[in-house]
Image (cartoon, rainbow, N blue to C red; front, side, top):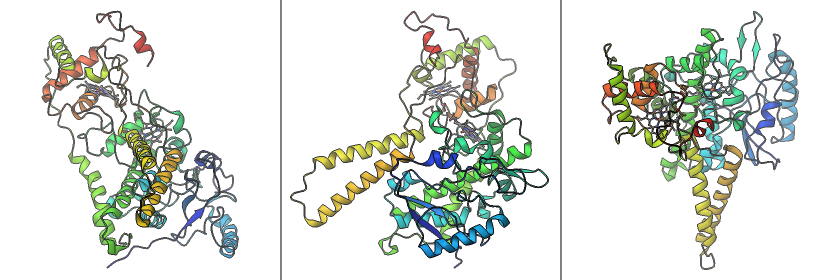
Length: 490
Ligand code: HEC
Ligand code: HEC
C-alpha cells in the first residue's frame, strides 16, 4: 500500500483570552524584505491563528524540506525553538519566504465543523496533517493529480504579493481577494464582518451564479465570468482590468480552495463512520484518501461541464406584450410563487426573514448549543452514577467549546434579502439568458427555489420578460399602503 508523506505539524497553545485575534494577525502580516523583487506591505500571512483562543494549528513548513520551521510564538520545547530560530534566520535571506516576526501564511482549520463533529485535538491535528499532505500551504499549493488543477496557474495566484525579476506578478489572490475571502477561502478576511452579504466561504463548494443545474458546480467559464463582471449590487468587485491569464489563475485558485475546503469537511465527517478498533484515527493510505475523500469532490467539479442547463431558444417572433402578461400571471401564481419572496410589488419585500445556507449553519449551531445548555441546566445530576455524571460533564464541556468556537470563528448570522426586481441590478448578470438560468435553477445556497419541474421551460422566458419589463418606478396600483419607501430602504 502506498502511503502519503504527512507533514509534521505542531499544535501551539495560545495564552490569548481575546475572543478572536484573526483581524490583527491578518493586518499585521506585512513584511518589507521578503523578495528581491518588489514587495508590498500586505502579505496576508498568519491565518493559522484562530479565534479559538486555546489552540491553533499551524504547519511547521517541513513539507519540502526547503523551508525552516515557522518562526512563530511559543509551543515547541526551548531547544528546538532555539535551533529553529537559528535555522530560520540563516535561511530567510536565502529563501525569501518571510520576514523576521511573521510566520509563513497558513490555513485556518474549519473549527466550526470540527466542534460540531466533536473532534478531539489529535483528530484535528490529523485532518491538518492530511490536508497539508494533499494540498500544501498557501505559499506552496499543490493538489492530487485527480483534482485536475493546473499547478502553474495556482502558483501565479498563491503566495505573498510579489513580482519576480522580470516583473511578473504573483500572489494575486492575496492582493485582490484575501482581505474579503480570507487566505483559507473561508469568507472571513478582515473586511468580511463589515459587508452584507458576507464574502463567500468557498469551503462547502456551493456557488450561486452559474450556467449549471442547481446543485452542480460552476463551470470554469462561470467563475471567470464572476471575476470579470463582479457581482453587481454586492461588494464583490469586477476584475475586468486584470489580464485573462490572471483571471484564469484566480478562477483556478478558487477551485483549489473550494476543493480543499470540501475535502476538509469530508475528512472531519469521516471520523463518524469509523469502527471502534480504528481508535478514532483515519486511515492515511492513498487508496482511502484519494478514492473515498478526494475523488467524489474532484468528480463533482469535473461533472460541471456536462451539467449545463438546456435553454430553449426564445421564439424570435414572440409577442412581447402577451409574453409579459403570461409572465406576470406566473409570477403571482401558485406554481412559481415568486411573489412569496419578491413581494407583491417586486421590491424584494416578501419573505425577508430567511437565511442562506452559510448563515443557516451558524443559526442552527447556536440553536443546538442554546437548546442543549438549557436542557442540561434542567437536568438534575444528584442521582447519576459516575459514568452518567462523566458523560454529562463531557457534554457540557463540548457545548462550552462549541459556543466559544462559534463566537470566535463565525460571523454573526444575517438574513438574506430577496432581490428588488425594480432596480434592474442582477448579481449573476442582466442578459435574458442569465435571468433564465437563475429562474430555472434557482440560486444554490440561497432560499430561491428552482422553477425547473414546476414551470415548463418555454414559460420561464415569459417570467424573464415580465421581470425585465418591471419599471423602476412603482406605479402605485397596489395602493397607498405600499409606498415607494419600501424600495428606497433597500
Ligand atoms: C470587497 C470584498 C470582496 C473582494 C475583494 C472579492 N470578493 Fe468575491 N465575493 C464578495 C462577496 C460579498 C461575495 C458574495 C456575494 C453574494 O453572495 O451575493 C463574493 C462572491 C464571490 C464568488 C462566488 C460567486 C458565486 O457564483 O457564488 C467568487 C467565486 C468570488 N467571490 C471570487 C473572488 C475572487 C477570486 C476575488 C479576487 C480576485 C474576490 N472574489 C474578491 C466580496 C469580495
Ligand atoms: C423562497 C423565496 C424566493 C422565491 C419563491 C423566489 N425567489 Fe428570487 N430570490 C430570492 C432571494 C433570497 C434572492 C437573493 C439571492 C441572493 O442574493 O443570493 C433572490 C434573487 C432573485 C433574482 C436575482 C438574481 C441575480 O442575479 O441577482 C431574481 C431575478 C429572482 N430572484 C427572480 C425570481 C423569480 C422570477 C421567482 C419566481 C419564479 C423567484 N425569484 C422566486 C428568494 C426567492
